[in-house]
Length: 205
Image (tube, rainbow, N blue to C red; front, side, top):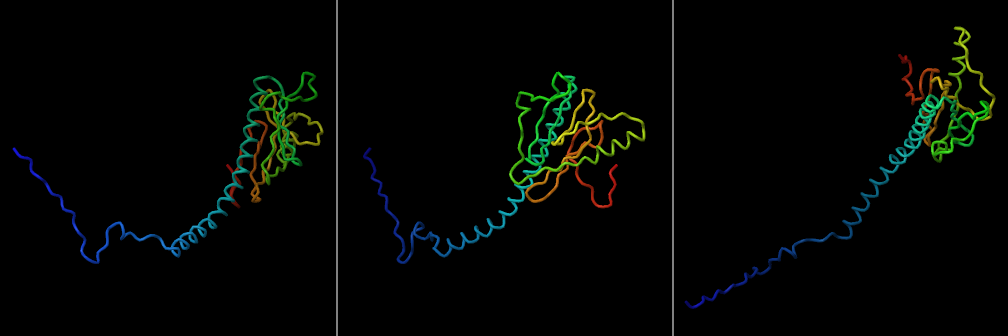
């Protein structure tokens, strides 16, 4: 059977019409400038929010590290049967753990990662509030309890006893924005935690 010849004819566009590819209009320089201007405005609005978020994160992270280190020191004091101490250098913005040496008087470095000196982030400061300790001393006098005598030190500290008791104290972390975060141990039988301030007039239960 002879092969049939197939002829494919190309369609021609009507005069004055444009191809689909040519009908696509590119961005003009003016439109591109307007888009960039809108992006710049959005970024300028977002930057302060991001800055405030980073400042808050610096304080929150520092407070969280202090809580974790305090809870670790308390757990080690109980398990090792040795007094552990959380040192808070408010002037230098540093905090670290030590433990009582075998002589029962001095304190020595831990010699591991948990004993390294931690520095607060740039712009974050530490404050020491020992009012909880004073309240405990007053309560002890009223009830006849015995409170461990504290050794004078230029650096504030918190001792964790093998019995599980902890020196009551409050450490205030102030972030770059001036917001204060309280890390507190209200009484000797409690642990350190981040305390959220109550609204004015409210009573903590």
